[in-house]
Image 1: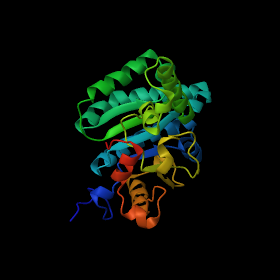
Image 2: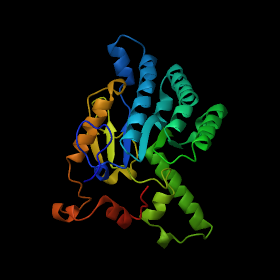
Image 3: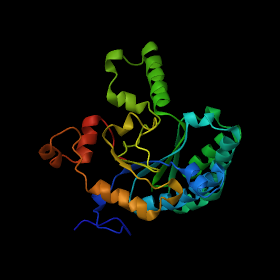
Image 4: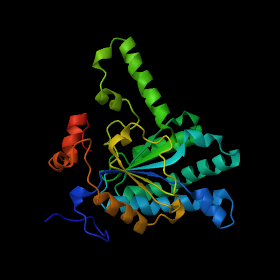
Length: 267
């Protein structure tokens, strides 16, 4: 008999657990407004919620957790709000990396880090190196990230290789494009969760989420508890993933088989 995800409130075989869950953590500002507090109050509570979700993802056997923490477009928010978010990111890394290490978590960041302060870039590099030898959950944080910008960077990198004669234009494939994305080496997300009731992906993992299942919940991020996370996983488990095939075909093909067809390497 297959083992089930540890402490899940419903039976779910380990092999049915999504390997990669991506989350759009939305609703901090609205949560604060409902409580009559400034937006930054919501961001602080949202940062606290991250701790619980990361711990649960690791306990339930998820391999990769990608959190959309700060988008390209977020730089256009009020300067004081951006400053608070940057401070919270630094605070989280300094405060939590010892605990992440204890939980055997690895750490990655995707996005354009060139806009961060030298101190934040140094802290990100130090945290990545500190956790590099761990073997558990990969915590992949999207910072200053945009899906279109990511694809543009990958396209430029490939074009430069063609210009240098390192590859031929005819050799460009989906596999080569994936290898030049920020997420190179990671499996594509199986499940994308967005909190706060919005039903859009907001320039998040545009290439990678081609065959992901989407789960939209009205719950605001600071209220997205372990119980709400489990509800999203239960919904995922109830779905039939077909990867463009018929239902009968899909039932005879595993997600791992599909990865091989797409040129991906399982995590």
